[in-house]
Amino acid sequence: MKTEDLSLHKATLAIHAGGLKKPVFGEVSVPIFQSSTFSFPNAAEGAARFAGEDEGYIYTRMGNPTTRALEDCIASLENGYAGMGTASGMAAATTVFLALLQQGAHIVSTASVYGPTRMVLEKEFSRYGVKSTFVDTADLKQIEQALQLPDTRMIYIETPANPTISITDLRGAAEIARRHDLLLVVDNTFASPYLQRPFELGADIVIHSLTKFLNGHSDVVGGMIVARNEAIYRRLRPVLNLFGGTMDPHQAWLVLRGVRTLPLRVEKAQENAGKLARFLSQHRKVTWVSYPGLPEHPQHQIAKTQMDGFGAMIAFGVKNGLEGGKTVMNNVKIFTLAVSLGGVESLIEHPASMTHASVPRKEREASGIGDGLVRAAVGCEAFEDLRDDLDRALNMIPE
Ligand code: LCS
Image (cartoon, rainbow, N blue to C red; front, side):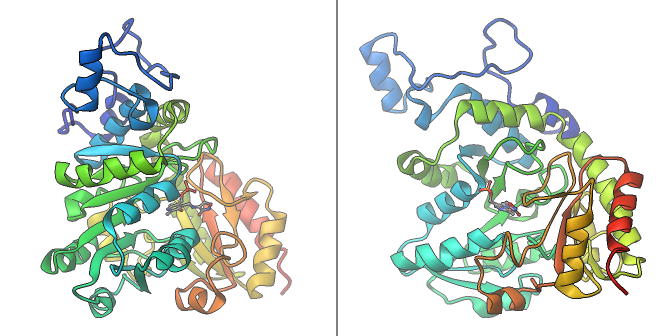
């Protein structure tokens, strides 16, 4: 499926990967093939496409040229075999669970994952007999201890994790998965393939919420599953097509447009984030900062070896806990108080009452998501303006 020259730099592939195999008019941008169905030149050809003997398109839920261009692009950036566009990041995660976990199966996952990823396993997949255990996967021993062999079939890691920004050693997790014949699935949303490529570290499946850095403009919801090899792809694709959580071509086109500037946006946003993390760690109203680029981050060394940069997400605590956090969120003017991340604009939010409110308090606190945690998704504005904005809002916290 891969047709790209993978020896090229990711910054080049982000711009060039995933064109049409046969341009129609020599167009430079991939067109939007806004067609639900595709005609067959004759009945034999229609039958051949359904039999999988001919690669031509049939029906957009089963494949579309614009969506395919994005799938090829992300698969190239990840060094994977093939991508599968999904309606959202949640559709990517749930398709992987649907396809690969049967009744009685058990999954071990990062405690600090995106709240709905945890909830869909604990509340929904549990109704079908799928068991799940959430541990601090930054500590590899906890993964090993949580295994319920032979029922455990999958290790599902989010790194950097949402919202604690803790880092899991992917090579170590892959070693555990290989030793016990388990699948390693990595949610690579926070890093993006520009900063981290889990297949190179031993993962079997990578998923993304494209809504974030890959699209980058806070105007699309979408997801992607990338398979390491053909065998895994063949287990996933029919399930995605049958359950129907597939991507629309217009959605794919917008994300493809966003991906073309991924390297520029990520470089700028993480430069801002690195400077802001240092600024916050010295601010007298800030009690702690979690950013993998800071030497005091507990997994700083692992982040250095498995990532090409430290990303643009920061978690921090302020004096007066939640009340202090509310003062900051209600008084910023350039940061926008909103969930999501990875857009060119900087956002700020409170996970315990927003993105992770669906996780019961006890589990939330055990996962390191205290009421005082504020999450900043740093964008591409001028650093000085972001710094002054946070400084002014922080200084409004009473002594
Ligand atoms: N994985 C991660 C790491 C995420 O952060 C999100 C969404 C998803 C998967 C789900 O993707 P979606 O279906 O929304 O495209 N994270 C969000 C967040 O932190 N704030 O708002 C959404």
